[in-house]
Length: 122
Image 1: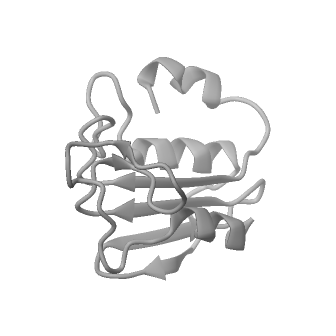
Image 2: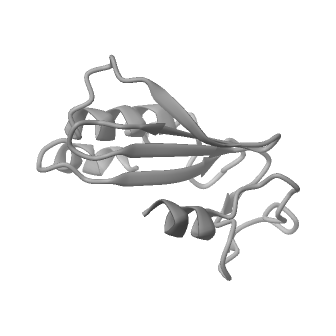
């Protein structure tokens, strides 16, 4: 999430969130920079907005060599964060590839099908 928009997302009602982010994303860096929040910052923002206090237990909903999805059952709405490895700015699942350098958006064994996971969850 762009730091420019952070303030507008901190307030308001609860929102169910499911995010997918690769540690190899060069377009929106996983660890953030001056322009982009880190994935951890974004997850914490949504958890706070949805009423999580830090005492909630997390549940791993998907685990492989390349992907881990963790879900937080916040009082207002759930927040799920899926972290992938080895991909650029891609959508894994469905027809869209992404903004990649050649070969950086090739699905690896174990990668989650993001579209399928979203439909199964919501």
